[in-house]
Length: 635
Image 1 (cartoon, rainbow, N blue to C red):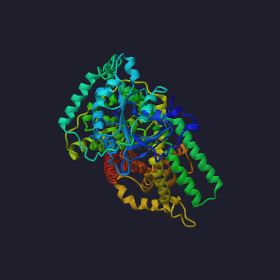
Image 2 (image 1 turned 120 degrees about the horizontal axis):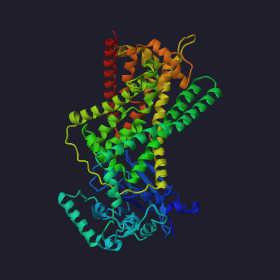
Image 3 (image 1 turned 45 degrees about the vertical axis):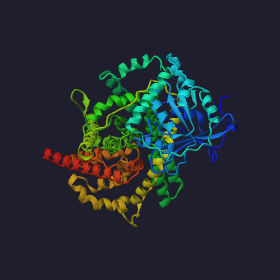
Image 4 (image 1 turned 180 degrees about the vertical axis):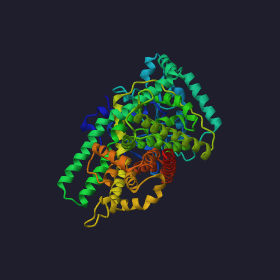
């Protein structure tokens, strides 16, 4: 009978909270199908959180064995050994050894191995065996080995290792039945003291490699004919053709993030606007209506509007990872990124940041070295995110003539391209400075196992997208909402006195701060209206457009805001001021939501402070030079 969770009828499903149930840790190398197996075992009965004190995800689920035993299972981050070189690997090591505060010691371990690549995982199996916990080795993807004409002998492997060995096919119905049945035969009552465990020495590692080779030879292991993988790699890893294909894929991802997400983003914006209009009509004018409409509804809407872009981005990431291409993309990019001091894996976070810096910062987790990861997090916000586009479009439309140059290319489009290029170039320069002057150390070698190509499983893709959406909304949504409400308060209080003229923001804390800060920004050509617009723009850059409309006492909303502002800005601002504002937004200090996520990812307020400080400095210097050079050129 098939007892995998997705096939259980609703009436047989057990509650998720199983306080007395034994807990099994699911361990395995990256790309071994471990998460797919976890999804098969638990189905929708799982929860995702963070481990205490770190940003690494904690995924826990539950299932029932054929004997009726309720079991909790913990999906640990992928690792190649228990040495713990990255945050993910360190969490896996500490959970297995019972060293993580607030985390129960697992009663048993299931090691998931890619049956097509046993040589890679056997050393991890030997390390886990030395810990002494009850253990099962699950040989996943045996169907691929059989299809390739290979052979694997689970019984002989079990004899050599001295632990139960079962075969699984996570993508096939009933493919985990043997594993679930083997859980029933485990002795959960056996407890082992692992406090004496120590990291293996170099001699012990070499001995483990030799033992793994001996076991493979004794079992007559043969992975099968891998001609397809080799044929694809001859093209996809080619130094010229491979890079061309990679850039074509990146171009598709870049276009999809902006174009495919547009209808959903427009729908979310329209929905938030409808809710706001309804509340505006239903509630009398006052502080409550302003809080709900301008604070809560606008705050939640500004969070949700990025969700379609994030889901599309992660859809491509999950598909490319499941297919086995992501490791090859990082390998191809390593040589290009290394020249600036960035790790090859950094290109994924940087690509993500073109949509929004938040998923870019979150994606930096794939980088093992802490300093490489921090360098990527610090420069990712320099990529031109979509929130800058309304400001760029407004200023360019007001000051750059709509004409063609250089054989038919639009001048406005060239200016926009230059702004994008400036962001990319500045990120590379900052990364170079960080790695060569601040963190002087030899670059770490880029080592990565290239998995076989496999077709992604729709269930895993859908579940991965759901989990990403849940994590994003839970981690960033509450923080962003709180900060949005704070910005609303600063921009709305105190209210103007009776008989006051001009925009209400003039009398608010934000308005008064804008007037007070004007002398500081006068050297870069900013007037007090721009300074006021920058204050709510800290919540989200595109808010600056609406803030400018408020300052100039306009009543238009939506797309009409930009259209109405263009002639006013062209008349009120000088060209050097407009160019200075564009330069400012290339380096503009990060929005509050990104700073909050950086705090979450680094578990410290120090790095958000460093990010805000250096970006504010660069923004001011760039605006200062642009304003004065443009003023000199026009005189």
